[in-house]
Length: 491
Image (cartoon, rainbow, N blue to C red):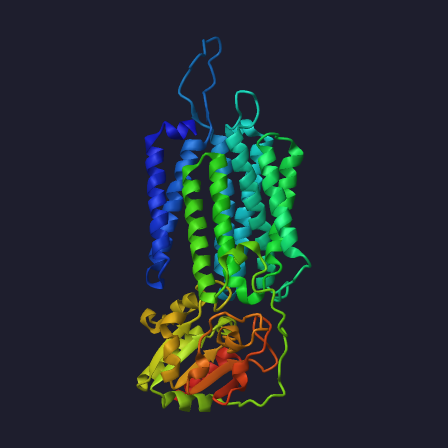
């Protein structure tokens, strides 16, 4: 820290990196500027990493010639061995990141994000543990040989947030990846248990400022791992996008805590930006879903409902249509609103969907896309897929901007979006998704709903009342194949 403070160029470099991160977040707020935002984020991170390497690698004095008086001999130089070790570690991490990014499917992006969040949390735990075991190397020892009080607070909070982020992100990954069910796992007395654990963690951190016994440090670590697990397990699948956003915020605060421990300004700024932006996004999404922001932090929101999860009323009458039926209805319409969901992502149907939209426009049909805030498995999932297929940004609308248009729309074309179009969210108080704003597709003159079969349910585990409406026509098939057949019929 002393070396960095003495070097004004390092402070200036960190300032430039921080500005790049702020501009990156601004760019990522819109699909049109997202690529520029990514580039600015990469530039800022490169500046921060290079500055940290230059200012924090140990310097060693050259060997003293035999028989010479060696006080202040020569100019200290960078420890080449340490530099090589760091570059090798960076190279290994970069290689893993590049390979993962190139191989990962867009449908697996949510669980990849959750996995990355877990690594940030684990890094915070390891840094805090290293600082506790060797405080002298981190410059946090006081004159009495004890760890500084402020450093104990930073260390305690860092390891608590990091451990919660790690275990919570692991559970989110398992749920998103299908290794765990999407239904809430409700433990008896979970709120009392969570409050007791949280109080215990905060109490032990306060005690840690007075006594740095190892048992206190490691107990905080274990309890934090446990509460992270307990906070995410009760959360159902329909609310998982908000969980991913909230864990993103936690990972940011964990990174900021690491920055305090390492005395690194760039990490503090970056972590604070990620933490605050993630919290703001979570708050916005909670408002969009009619959820309580406090309940997100407490865990188990949306999980108190006792609806008949997984019930499928296949004996109820419903209408089945074909690609030719869908093509005819849409070609005769004045306006078609397309509602994409996770089923589109699984089938990788976004390119065929864009081609269908172009064909309909050629027939003189107005085509719009309606995006629900939690469509898919993470915030912005559908926007990314549509942007990848070169769907014009002006054709894509958020829920609050387009919901009023369904009543004047001839055809609502739903492709793999189940829970976010379920009218039960507005009428059935026993449903796990009750109170969540949904797209009013049932108000359209005709609803075309692509689904693999009538036997499945959405991620929230509830049947969709929309399937059995008089104005709904079910198109049972793989989403991509069905859209491709519709495109052929339009020709």
